[in-house]
Length: 430
Image (cartoon, rainbow, N blue to C red; front, side, top):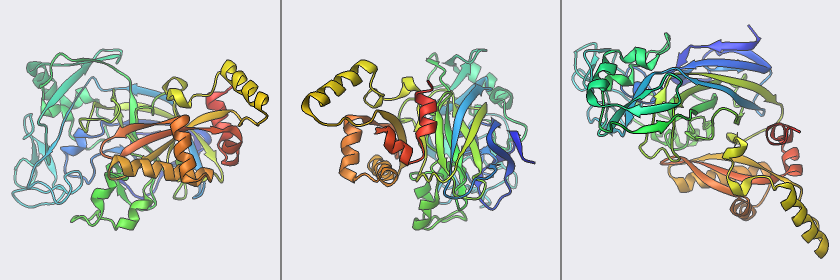
């Protein structure tokens, strides 16, 4: 049933455009989604082919290929009381080609083996058919982080407390009832006790459904590359990688008060969300961070006929790189006087837009973002590079290959692209 408000707690592992969507939600409506932890829970649950568990896609009334959707993140509340994470090491013999997707039991050979939990620790996830430990990953260096009741501070705990949390792993994770992952807290890791960190929640995976089925964690140019000619049923051809929508961004500017503009590739778009992090430094150097269950509120606006080649991020004003921020009144007046004195026109006021790019490495990801800027603006590649250098920045979302390239673009150009109104509301509401 179509509505202004759609609640979702249903979970998905694959983003499949053939699957029936929830909703639809109306243009101007709201999605409230209950999400589960993103990485380590799914990574130790080889039953399903993805390194993420995300919410089942929600359709948007009237959204068709060639449109875009503006998703304003108006709410982001952490539900987990504790989480476990760290660096990863694939366990040889427990997967085919890709440990995130191709889980296999090393004893009976079952693919995507059904599992159960026995005890705690890395060997607690076992094959239902033969009782063999089957988690495809180990944590060479990991931690368990406990949050205060207001979810403002996280502190990593010593081993006895990590083991206590592991014995009530799902409760500390606040796993939604519909979640089918094993809680990462089962791992009981405590290699970094006593480290305190400020909670600054962000969303690692949010966007629209691609036009062919992708594991939700692989809806990006770096992880998606692992699917090309892979030896498991979710393999794709190299040319099909272009069908992704780059929702798995891990860009920490995607937080409350920001707007993500996403492409519509299939009828109804299929908006999904997952992989919320309590905090994450640029680049996510460890490969993983503090995955938590959360309640996410997205306000949805349909941009008819606005075709975007990949996600755009309108960061909160305080998060925009300094070089890309709109000029203050005094600086604008000084620039105008200088132009008047020498008899040339000053470009219209510029406003920042972040273009997401992804690829197998950071150079490819940056080239992807620059290409997307050129395609949307019509600017030559060299001009794009100069504009990004003078009035922009490149920020690393995730290694090995997701970046956010922010560039300040003139108001008239933004209007021609169909983006001015959403940008005006975000950065210049007066």
